[in-house]
Length: 313
Image 1 (cartoon, rainbow, N blue to C red):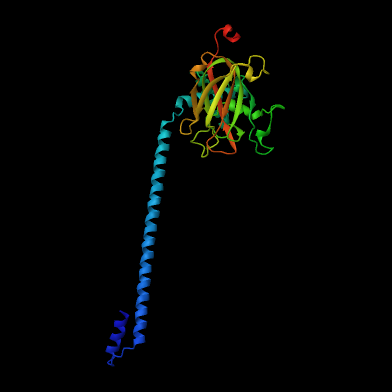
Image 2: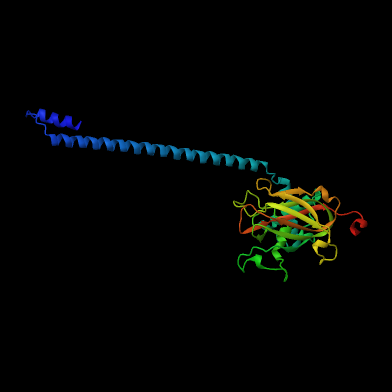
């Protein structure tokens, strides 16, 4: 094209056509250069088009994924059984009665509502037959545990009950957490144990392990995973060695993060009517945290023996 324009310019001037070889060569070089650049530009344009198309598809895939997650969360929210208006009115009425009876203070705080709701849920669970014999407020206690996870000397996890290795805040494991964050006791590493003295001798029926609810926590890697629960009867001799008594493997299970935050596991049939007043939870792994494992609440369900002869065996 450049050659044609140059030759046409010469013709239109009325002069003679003189073709200089060097001039033609330079024109050829320019044409070749332009063609090369146009080809390179086309390659770059195609590459940009493909990149834009890939990025747009990736964005749509992420949007579809988030939409599916949102639908799942909405479904879970729809399945939640919220307190009825009657339940809320009863809670508020009870609080007003208590406040008025105490000191005439009619103000109700959020903490008051939470505590009252906790008591209601606890009484309801006991009414339905799931009595927790590992509940600290009923007399159960942590008698031993593996090394706790301590963050600084000023943290509350640093306090001990006595000169033993049992920390005061280990009692958190023996109180219903209701899936709330930080209502737990942390143990160092991804394996460990907790030993609990029940409030009385029972025939165990099931074990419940709680962790923080997935609706309020983005990281639940500290949840225990593979667990074993053992039980035995120590009686009044608190110094008796574990090896001297009959030990029952009460349950063996894996805590599943995709299920409810409070998961109940039946006691093995091999336990039969065996009596226990002490249980021990052993876990050999968690869901990914290398530093610590959090035990939110361990509950032990069962019934008390009906005859004195059973206690004597």
